Length: 397
Image 1 (cartoon, rainbow, N blue to C red):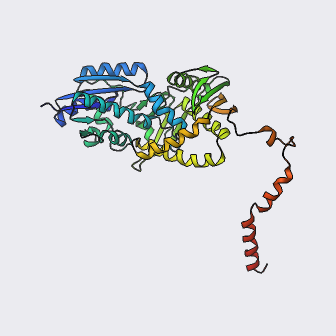
Image 2 (cartoon, rainbow, N blue to C red):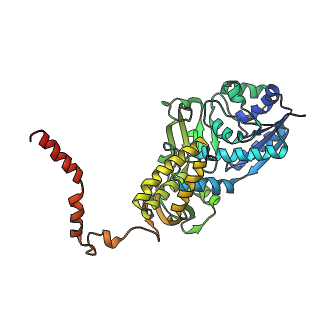
Image 3 (cartoon, rainbow, N blue to C red):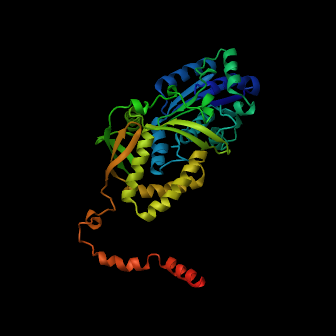
């Protein structure tokens, strides 16, 4: 009986050399590759498919962009998904990719699953949290063999596997519709200033054009329109990536705490995510009560940590989504933003569910008798005053 393995395939260096390694080191007779399209550039998907058909025994390309936006990105927006400032682009995609790889493995009757993640990063955990829900073996050549990037480049060259990575530009890039991450090589030095060449989605803020104003429409906590034009999720995010990126909005250079405890220097581009998350948070402040906002901040933080860890099958993740979805029933309206040379600012917001009364809050309105607040003021800080008097008395003051 043949030993059949299904490999999560990106077309990059790591997953490409996994194909011959799985045969040489793991005695696999058949390697089936699965490329999952979550919004990578069309040419990258085509190149990955072309390469896989040459060096693997069977290949699948799955377009799941709509599913990714609807079932993963939209819940992320509702939850204000953010981990230490990172908008969870790579992490939120991994469980979906892993689930699709498992589906193909079950369809093909494979006995093993494989990925090209290293033993130092987070992705190994995100893939395997899904893979290990099955009874199939899990192979991780990069981790098992302690491979280095330099060794991988040489191995690819020796096995006639074309790769775009070189020792001079060893950037590791991961891209989907929500974000683009760039790491590796000299970028691993926190003191190294990244060259402009690593960026593709965003222009240099210094080169950005004059300011542009946009009106974003939301329903049930998710974006539905730009300047009153209704768009589906994929189209809206792609368009906003282009617009905001042209203004240099959405670059991030950060020190990130990985799940294993290692600190890593990470570079990201996420124009649409930057804009949509900021606009969504602002709209929530208009329609949710103070108690809801306070509690939801804790829920959002826990949701984001689970998403970062790749634990979307943890029961708590589903529990949190129930609460979040309920709050989002009123998160509807518009947010007006301005994009200008790398910055994004909120100009205005409206909602039919706004918990706001201009008449009540205005200094020019007599609709509220200000004297009514005196009783509240008398008790405000009451315990602190009692404490102060106790201290003064004990000191004989």
